[in-house]
Length: 299
Image (cartoon, rainbow, N blue to C red; front, side):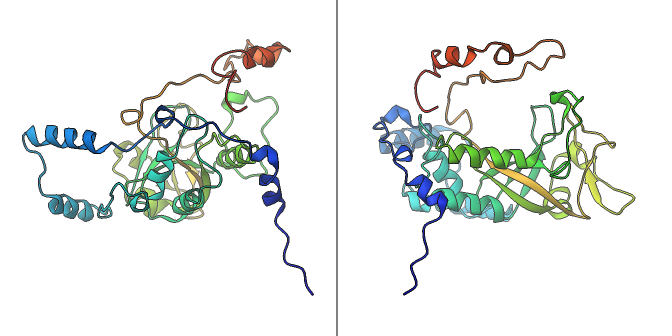
C-alpha cells in the first residue's frame, strides 16, 4: 500500500515545540486596532448627527462609492464581513503582526497578488521610488518596483546607501521573519503589473504622470520624484508594459491606531566616514538585549 504523502519540511518546522510556545494572554490594550464598542459607536453617531451637512442616506454614499470604482460597503461588527486587509490590521498585537496559524494570512497574500488596482500615487518619504496602490475594497499596499535583474551584483566600491533597493529583498525579509517565528514584518508578495493600465492610466498624481515616457526600445517607463535614482538615467521600465514589483500590506493609519516607534538598533550610519555602533562594538548585541524595549518580547 502506498504511504500517504508526508508533511512538508515547513510543516514539520512549524510543528516543532519551539514554534508552539505559549503566548501571553492578550489584554485589551495589547491590540493595535480594535472595533468600537456599542457605546462608543453610539457616541460617535450622536456627534456626527450634530454636524452640519452630515451624510444621512447610506445608499447614496454607497452609490457614489461604487461610481468611483470602490466596492459597496457591507461591513458589520462580524469579522467575516471584513476584507482581508482589515482583518489583518485588527489582528495586530503587541507581540506579533499576525498569527501564522490564522487563515487570513493566506487570504491577505492572495488579495495583494490578485486584486484589481484602482489607484496609484507616489508615496512620500524615504529616499527611493515607491508607490501607494489602492484597491476596490478600500485596502492599500506599498509598491516597490524591480530596478535590476535578480542576479545583478552591486559594485563592491559603491556606498551601500547609494545602491538600488531590491523589491525581492522585501519579499525575502517577510519569509525569513516568518520562518524564524518572529511575525514582525508585514506580509509581502511579488506581482506582475501592467505599467500602462495599472499605473499611468489611473494615477491622479500629476507629478508622477509627468515622468512617463516610451523608451527607444518601445518599453513604457517612468521615474517619479525622489532623492535617489529618480531620473531619466535611471527609469523603471516594463517589458514593454509588464513590470515585476513587490506589494506590502500596510499598518493602520496613525490617526486610527496611535503607536510609538523606535529606531532600529541595527540601522546604518549613512555616513561616509563613521561606522555604526554595531559595526565596531563586539559587545553591542549584549547592550541591546538589556535595553528597553528590546529586553522583552520575542527576539
